[in-house]
Image 1: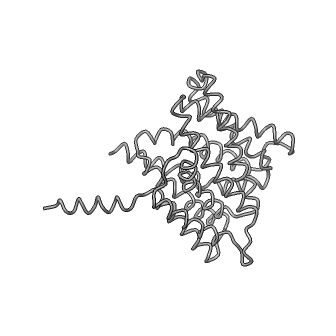
Image 2: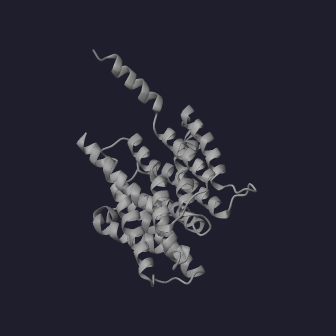
Image 3: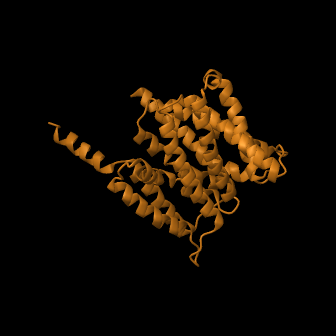
Length: 297
């Protein structure tokens, strides 16, 4: 129990980091272009992770490298759509929209892995659709390009989780997780050199955002998650990580003075409820509690 509590606290910590990543990316974009920022984030994270787990990285076989290449491309799609999306929408919106991946994962699993979708997941999907409409549509029922890119990011994230779940059953998960960061950084460097004016940050706030994104949100985040999940359940993990958009909204309000319209808060609340419903089987919890009470003298 103590190990699980420690693991849950570790996951809660990285959830705060990942909630802050939207705000940090927004700050980084003030001085760096999207591919440039993403390249620095992944390369620094890869180097730090590879130093810590150098034995696993250097002993990786061809299958691990191949799978890492595929995952790296998915990561590029995920983080670039998020980074570009943040140029046109708020960090608060991005946090809630990207959390859609929690609901998209069972849909993708059903379509490609033939895994059944539970009734509560269907309810979550319905709540999500309403939540997206309230959060993103303006008074003329239009959705801006930034919100669309964040929804695309959620799709990339969901595919990445499903594919990663398949690959980790076949190869070393630590080496796989680290090498994907290296490939993602390599791809972004190439694209940045070809399409942008790639450079290092030249302001203190830019350096701070890049280092925070690289060290805490990427390197520490991936290592801690893989370690913590050895001692806690998938339901606990999903429930804790579903708080990411909440931390994103709180931190964006504190540091960026971002606020949502009243209907936006309603949409965000529905999306949060949908994510919690998707991850926590409330019916089973209530049934277990009722059974426990019936067994009391």
